[in-house]
Length: 263
Ligand SMILES: *[C@@H]1O[C@H](CO)[C@@H](O)[C@H](O)[C@H]1NC(C)=O
Ligand SMILES: *[C@@H]1O[C@H](CO)[C@@H](O)[C@H](O)[C@H]1NC(C)=O
Ligand SMILES: *[C@@H]1O[C@H](CO)[C@@H](O)[C@H](O)[C@H]1NC(C)=O
Ligand SMILES: *[C@@H]1O[C@H](CO)[C@@H](O)[C@H](O)[C@H]1NC(C)=O
Image 1 (spheres, helix red, strand yellow):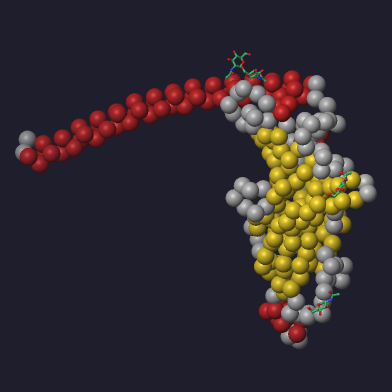
Image 2: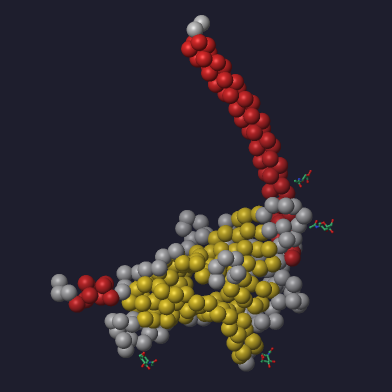
């Protein structure tokens, strides 16, 4: 063998040994993964059994800590798309993911994993009866299944997310039309529970409560979304409210092209 051939053989040997090593490593890796997975599957089964047991004796009418400290509900909107902003009807439309977090001690357990379900939670356990005060129409997406996600953590923290299309009332001042900017509110509270039972806060999980995926419609641009916590004292009781204000600026180029330019 000349030196070149020897070099080739050496390289081939190195490659073979690397392949063997990775293969062994790969197999062990697989084995560990399969074991981890079956243990996780078992734990999921156990959590599912635990939750089934809890729900057997669960009273949906009773809020968490009924009679005790109020339930804190953390809220976030994710605006998926903005629909029509209608000056004549003074309405605007939004497609949102509406997310709420609260704690229900009845779901506390000693397993380590979070449990995820794709269900309409209102059919299963207590959820806050949050409603949108200035909503004219709201629809809940059910295609292909309820567009809902529940995550229950070991400490009883519940995350509930649903997809909604909201048609909301917004008083618009058109005196500066077409160079106008409109401020449209979205106001929510609990329908039945006063502050003594349920209160709302905007989430502090990285956003100020609103996350916006789409900022523009054909006619408007969303320039700002502000959030505020409000409280309303009514004769029927004191309710906790959250307000968000969306500032829409009319897109002049759209106006010029479609309205002023003769067709
Ligand atoms: C799940 O439950 C089974 C039987 O009830 C038990 O043997 C097992 O240890 C549990 N697994 C976990 C991960 O808690
Ligand atoms: C979890 O563990 C604690 C301490 O061991 C125990 O008191 C409690 O009952 C357990 N919770 C459940 C749901 O099994
Ligand atoms: C509408 O906007 C104009 C200009 O900003 C303002 O002068 C007027 O008071 C507003 N009208 C109402 C009813 O708010
Ligand atoms: C509502 O709030 C007002 C002012 O903070 C307070 O005086 C009143 O007692 C509260 N009403 C109830 C029913 O808690």
